[in-house]
Image (cartoon, rainbow, N blue to C red; front, side, top):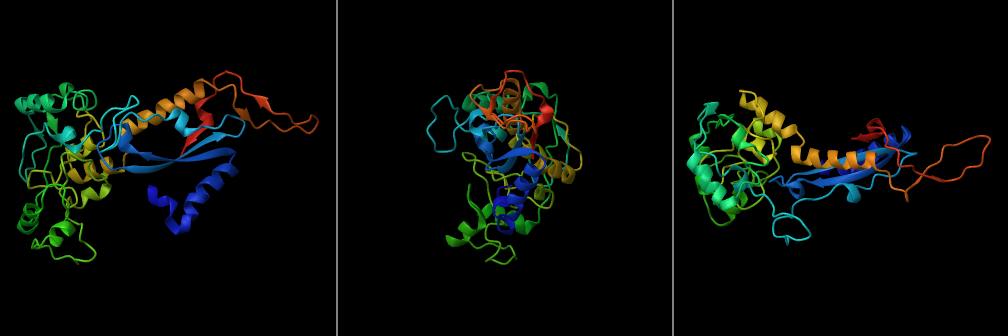
Length: 300
């Protein structure tokens, strides 16, 4: 998590690196912005990438390649336009809060209209909707009438703090100073808020852009870039916990490809730390192009 850098005054952030180096690794901290790999959410996560001292340094910017621009950024240099929340979930049929059916049919006509607007790149190429026989885990949790009323008072892309500041009267009983953004309606044309395991408790910060309900487990999984063919537990709390704690598959793919490139193609110009010998003088040597083992690279 990005908060690791500042938690306890940076002690944990530093300690991870120090202890990894004591184990014989050179460590590179790398902050991952998930949307730069086609994940439609504001997810930022902290990685630590370690390599053995005698191997070339893993240079993250050399091997981990962005595939998508950010919202509002120019789409250039071979990057693709960002994937928005609307592109990720806009083909799904409308449902009401409290609809607990685990399995249902897709709306094919709605899918056709969605593809006409957004194309196939996300729901087909990433979510594999054409391979899923039925729509599963599309279960909407119930909400109180008070919460549903507050949902209706929010404009698309607005949180409760913003609604209160423009004069909206909201009914929620929480401390207005500490919970001003507790209710958040997501926006179709933006990135979704970071999907977290807390979704299993309530979905108040993940209100659907246009419907009066919070997001379903399947929608959360799509926002994480899990395909519709991925089987989720029937218990929504378990689904939300698993999805919220997961690394988005598209991020895992990007990092995995980077590690594979690193371990299969050493760079001639990279210097490595020589092995120490009691009888011979220490001289730097260069890396051969012989592939190194995956066991010599570690991600924390």
